[in-house]
Image 1: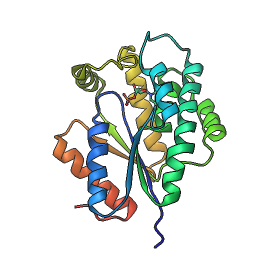
Image 2: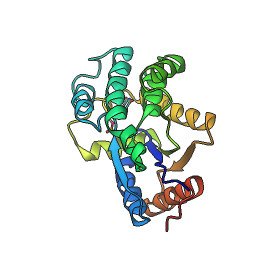
Image 3: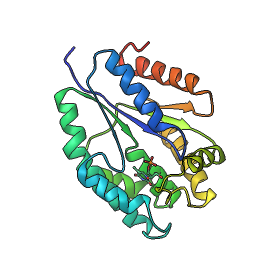
Image 4: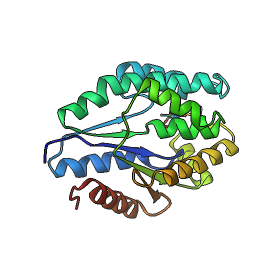
Length: 213
Ligand code: TMP
């Protein structure tokens, strides 16, 4: 089999444990001999990290929904062109903490822009780049916001949005996963970390024909 790269994304609401699990999966894949690029959105390239600062900090209403979606896509295009596509072309495996499903869930469902504008923006800005596998870490809103609040970082703009917003995006993520079962795996992030990590390794092994212990 040719040494083709694979693109895996982690998705979920606030405090679902994505960054811990991105790191775990990166190490597990490296133990299997893969070269892995772990990255994140918004961010992951120099320009996109600059745009990230505009999105995660400041007043909740500093952007209207469409401006916010455009900023996420501006960041994503830079990230895709400069980091994700070159890594996949080298045959590396790419794991991204968030990708387009976050824009669909947060701006499409959460802010109410709807699915179609996000699909159109994706196709204009990003074209055909889609994950091979998306792991959705699903967690009740209250539990997630509790974990995220305990982290106490400065990047709290989305955490400060209303509970109704967070419920819409959780439902949105589940709807996205239900529409694309071949790409998406939903994992219960309320379980013990060891069980969540075992589920993730099993999903990657099953779906991407790699044997993770
Ligand atoms: P993070 O906390 O997972 O690093 O993500 C930063 C915030 O950005 C998080 O609250 C979710 C939000 N976000 C969107 O609203 N739309 C997007 O497209 C992405 C990638 C993130």
